[in-house]
Structures are given as C-alpha cells and as structure tokens.
Length: 183
Image (cartoon, rainbow, N blue to C red; front, side, top):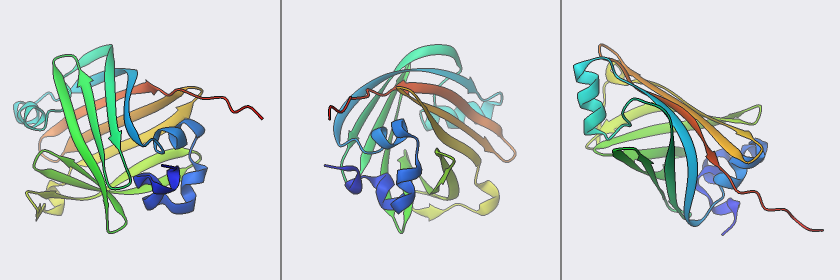
C-alpha cells in the first residue's frame, strides 16, 4: 500500500508532499510496525487532572526514558499503542468529514491537519464524549506537532483543560528506518 492510501495523505492531499521526509515515511506506513523511541513526560499537578489522565491512560510523569510505539495501519484506520513504563496508551485514528479523528477511550478528538515548513501541526477542532459534542469552554487546548530529522520523527504534545490545568505534556522521538534507494 502506498502513501496515497494513508489517512494523513487523505486529509492533507498535496500538502502531504511538503512534510519532512521522515514524517512522510511514518505517515505512509501500512501494516504492523514496532518503533523504538525516547520520551519525556510532565504530568498533571492537580488531583482532577491526574484522575483524567488515569481515565484516558495518559502517560505518567517521567524523565526521558525508552518507550515502544506500535503502529497497525491501513487506509481505513490506524491503531497506535504507546508503551510507556507502567502504562500503555492506545488510540485509533480514522478520517471523518475531512478531519483526522483520534478515538481515545470514550473521547473522540477531531483534528485539522496543517503542514508548516515541513512540520505537521494537528489543530484540535472539537471533542465528542460518547458521541456527544463537548461544549467549547470544556475543550482542552492541545499542542500536537511533529518534526523530522535524519532517521527520527520528533513529537511534542501538550494538553491543558480549562479549570483543571495541564493534563499531560510529552515530547520525544521515534526511530524511523530509512531505506536507501539504489539507482
């Protein structure tokens, strides 16, 4: 399966070709893959934030550590399994009405995707909980972006909820295997 079938190509269209090389490789993968990486996590400082983090299996606070990312992808959906020490976070991605929808527990996060100077930005447009739209004032602010460097996909994600504060912030990278093309 080629990148023309990937979820990210479906949402980004021709802008997909403006992504950094490693981002194009990652978001074109079809099948099952295990990718090693490193990650650092800052957790919530509030009881409610920690409870919500536990409910949605958000990673716990940790200094930079090894973690494993498992991807199962086809043209209809992607399943992401992030194995952090002591916790696994699972989400499913699909395309709906031109947006990328990430299903995380009972919550669906609806993202608009943009490419900016090779960087992928995921802009949260709305949330549904058990299929019910969340009022705008309860929608967290989310920073989610990816960048590329030789052999790596770097990620930076931060989620803050009004009246609760930070739910989680995590950053790190995945090793992306580059294959040489012989001409």
